Length: 486
Image (tube, rainbow, N blue to C red; front, side, top):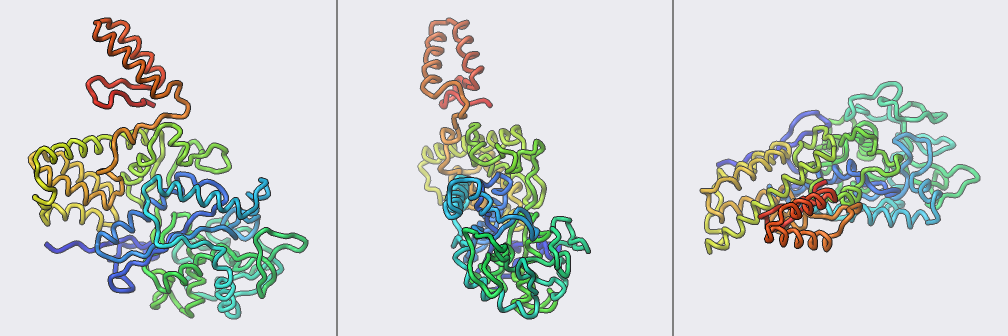
């Protein structure tokens, strides 16, 4: 049976394309990382679940993966425009901490969320402030032909490269999305800062000397430089959220064209990456995705409410990465329930395999059985189908346990849920606001069991109702005994 071709959606061409690596046997991937001025919200984290799935698929197909995720610790303003304060400087000004302490704290918080979601570590975390000198050299190399200087900094003239904005498909005279602020003296509305000078009379905590004055690099410059230094140009795939598709990534492409001396995007080193991939938005109707809302939706809030972080990973995997995903607590609860069912099935399967005394490899998956996972993941990372195929295999009671276990192991290479190690006890998290702890629950359940043994069913029902009022669901006949019911 011929293996299917790994096919991915390229935002640059708006078409599905077969993956053909730049370097034979390798896959080089760059993902836009966080600006570490605050905690990431769960919509931010969807991008890294997606990038992790992509990396798993590439390794599944036998490629040696080099995945880079950057940490933006300088230079990103309040939006994609060229006015406003640096987000890190802004965060430091509101606290008693230095900008370096702010960056360190939120970098650690982001990496903690990465671990909680079972997202694998990249080959390298590239930190923007480690690449200031290469950024200055990159800017010097393109300045004469592609840039001009204003009082506020060095700006890139987008009219000097071919097909600017092709990735966004939305560039107009006002800059496309209306998200670019007016800067006095810009030649074109879409021109963007390569280097931002520190305003006269001000001192920033992060600033460096450059040929264009003391200041800091532009956000777009950072990614072009780190990708070129760590992966070379061209490389295989650049990923990010769909919001990057409109301004940030077109600006990266323009810089890459200028650096390579490219004309149109059809030349060999056209855009820096051969394939540009974007995950769609996580939609949340109450407005709590905004970090300005105070208690915004970050992963810790889900944990505090008693939801295991892998329930959110499951929620992401149930949808295609290019589709909008609506967040709701009901939807998250359904994803947690589905994950629990999978874990319960795998637990029973492990017990069945142990009882059979058959080694796992005694019934290998056939090419056709393996192909059901292969075709799903190679069809632009269709994890929703991988999940369905796995559930179908687990439900096939006539299939030997050794073969079904192999199916779990193979599917989880793509899903990253840790199904062979995860237990239902792991998934049972106490909500922070719970009015009772585990010891109190166990004591009440022991009293209820004694009441049932004494045939005092009114007392038994009263204890059950008391537990239910505190958010605890009693499960008679289940070895786990109880779970939180949110």
